[in-house]
Length: 300
Image (cartoon, rainbow, N blue to C red; front, side, top):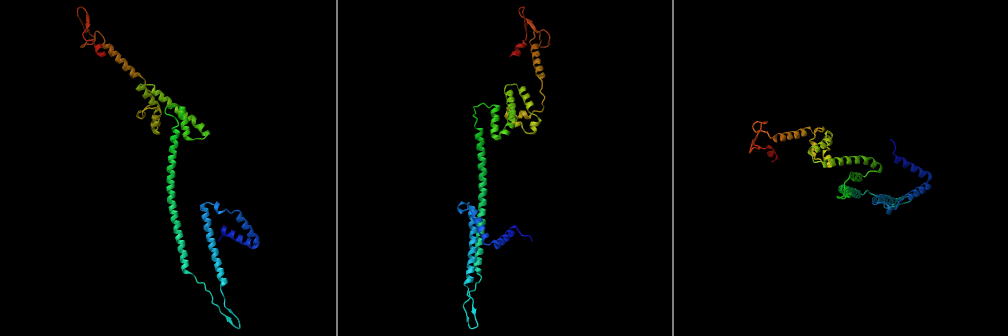
């Protein structure tokens, strides 16, 4: 069976002790003293570990020392050819109760350690939850501060919008220059569309702008709400757009021309009620006068 690294190192140290003797022990003590850190400078966790190791080491050392003292103090019976001197022998018996006491002590210490670990785990989970909540609160506060730097009365230009978005992104200077032109293009286009919509009151012209802005891709990627917020166009209007074709004003011109023709026809003097095109005027005191003036009815 292959030896572990610790076993190899242990055998190497034993050989060095046998070979060098006191010189090896001096070097080892100097090395340990060189890297020794005082207990006052150690963290609490490391200090407790060192104290526990020292406690175990001291207990082992005292146990060995007491065992050696008992061996030295034991008196052995001496015998000779002439006479024998007898003295009471000291017999060391195993202490069963003491062993059980040590086992109970270790069991209780282990139970206390497990209980402390459980409590620490619960406290750790609580602290992690508090940390997440505080980090989210801090993020909301920083976002509120960054967005609240601009006063409401200050004009919201595309440039100011771009600078505000860049501050929120917190980019590096190199990436900032790459993203700035794209954000500026987006804000300028949205501003121009909103200005064009606000400058006209015609429903037909507003619908034409909506047809140009909205389409299949905006519906596919669900951007109609964002377009509505950026341009001021109603989201329902953007959703109802089905074609990109800008319709000409032919129908409107035809309706206007038809209305003018009807008005001219109704304003004729020889407009008859029963037979259109016939004279519908009477003479009163040798003066021609219309029986029914339809132009007056149209004006009412």
